[in-house]
Length: 421
Ligand code: AMP
Image (cartoon, rainbow, N blue to C red):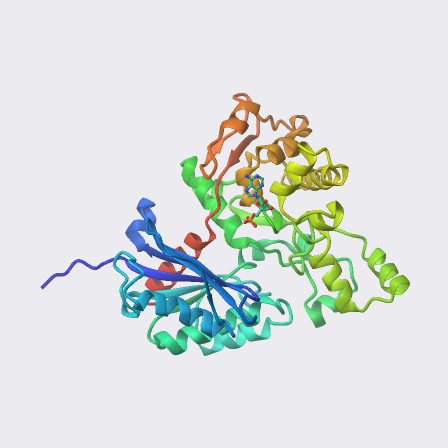
């Protein structure tokens, strides 16, 4: 008897060094085409490895559990907590009452180096490949591997798992964009080059821009501006990445929450020698203590800094905002020159989506490039919604498009699973 096949329920996992965020997304090829995919549940396990882990999760439209304190000695325990919740009967996730209702898993993987240039079904060889990429992503790749292994053990090997790499969208960069000016042997021997990150977000933005403007992806010429705790900009020409601001690691480029972004490496050598810092201490300095936090001395959070600068007139908070906007402007200008023009710039990420203040600051000097912000549209755009915020006659349009990396991962899972049939 013919039976209607239900859509897939996909668990999307994003394991960080001490956290495991997840969503359960219902989708299939039809739903992708129609844009009717749904997030059924979401949550986060934090403080993994510390004595008291923190778990919060909820089914869409339900109350859920918030900030449950539970021992989470490792990522396996965190993933177990998610599965226990699903099986408990208390989760109330539409159509997902047991682990049997999970059809596939998608994993966000930070670094695929040159080995992985597109999303791929996970098998032993892929696990080995991600393991080989650990030196490139020493904090994230091991946690993400633990996520893969835990899901395999708990769900069984028959449930397909797909790896989606943060670096893959940038694999189309030409050598002139990805090479550093070091002796060539460092590229050959140690694979030192620019890889770029946030690829899943920039790819989502590229696809969504095409959809909104009803054009094929191959016709997308934009600068994708992802501003969040981590920030990066991507030049997209004919639908492909031609340059991006993050480099060998997610440190290069813009000023970020706690990362310094672009810096003369010789300045770091000077600090190392003068203050006697080790490589590890420098790593902590430039990744954890710098950026908005380091400059302001107040916070890594843009909301705090906007309040401190605008309400309290704090000069260091103002400096941090000015520096942040200055770098964004510099990269937008550089990328438009590199691409020989663009049709639009698109803001996304926690700051890009939600801060009219920062969008206005970064667009201030851009009219010289034909990029003209409509101040009222910028102020009035509803948080969390997509829209155009440029003046009617602006040669280059300005858009805000909320990113959705989890959805992009779920779509890749569907496509990989369908292709493997
Ligand atoms: P993300 O890493 O994409 O989640 O973005 C986090 C950043 O977005 C933090 O710096 C937040 O302060 C910032 N953010 C979120 N909402 C707002 C808002 N309404 N105004 C300014 N910044 C915001």
